[in-house]
Image (cartoon, rainbow, N blue to C red; front, top):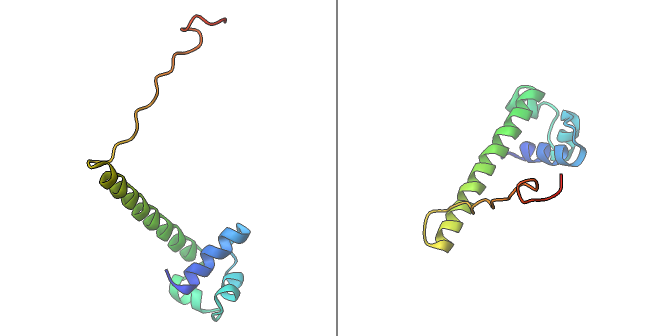
Length: 93
């Protein structure tokens, strides 16, 4: 991710808003630079979302690989517990 992209992610996380002027201040770049790279504010948001999903996918793949190595086989999800509904267990209605 670019310096501007990192600054945008930090700004969004800190304020839950994305103002290009605030991103520019945080990144220490010129006002026109984000528009040169991302085109519009929406382009910047799209780049952030794409980067987030890419990193999430990488983290998920890494986690799966590490689980597989620890357990010596393919990563498996733990089985779900079977729960008996209260009315089927003879409980009061």
